Length: 497
Image 1 (cartoon, helix red, strand yellow):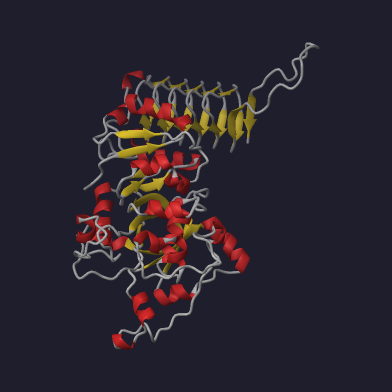
Image 2 (cartoon, helix red, strand yellow):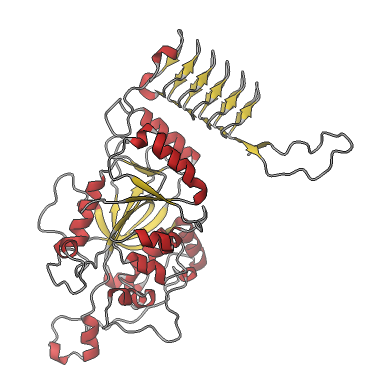
């Protein structure tokens, strides 16, 4: 029970930096057991789809049971045991948790109708529309249906009141294409027949936190057109719970060994075409009379009896993280995969009082002795890492300064994030800027909402707004220098967007 092994799956090009961080970074070396192992399959690329990773032989070899997936860009204050507990109660049940034998006929406590291993899954989504929304934040479109109410009320801090059944999931981009194609959003009759009341969410985002049963690996393997876990694996799985015939096309009946299921039509290939994910390929009429529980079982044809005895598809559930009235009144949950999110999230964490949460620091200013006199450092909203040097008359407000950075005399920083060993010259004025590792800003520069790549040098006196400054090495010399000309001599330069 619980987490027994942790694997960090990464392309080979990133394995060495991760190994160095795991062995040297004090925040990572102090993590509790079990320690993480790095898995870097040779054929894995940075552009590989997440569903492709589930099909990779090296990945399948190390996953021998139910598993939990986490992204590399996650900030989460929800206790992991709370999610596991909610999944085990809602999906595993005593029958699923106590035996993996396919013939196990013990208690069925979960909503998936599982038999010793036929468990469902759980995904996590969170609200992106906050008091200070970020325009560039990606969103997803999901449709949920309420679960049957339990006679026993969950504890006060339980996540179960916020869990529902996922019946549809896709990205906002795909939703936009679908609406444009159909001049509206088509709702399937099969969905309404199965769930008379649904909830559509358009401002939430997939946190990419999944608790999956082991059989999901077979689902990904059988459907080689699946590229994304969130949109393909989870999206198709959610639809299979209510769309007639889709479970057969996905191979779910074969995965579960359900011999009573009918085979797909002979003109259809095993698996599904990912390009038709939202086209609704199958829509069979349902005979409501034959589904009535008031019929005598002897009067129902044998084929109908067989279909009614088929086990239900284990559901994929959705935990919808509640939207707090204020950012600090609920555990933080979001993915940080853009510069804007990095800036805003870092500034938010800087407001945490010292040593109050796992994401707060022991102290706001790590090395006070390196701060000169006549300086202004707004302690409640600012974080200064070890060995940060601040010269006289400098001002720092609502900012996060990395280790070994240098702030020149008279410089003013507001709402900025500086990576380790960055330098800001004298009398610079920086507002809403992000400086990469070892970036340098020359004396007297005025920058607003500017992103500076690591190692880039901003010339003294530069004035810029809403730009990205980075080293550009895309061009190669393509002409000889026989004439002594300097033209084309530099293969690297600056690119500003």
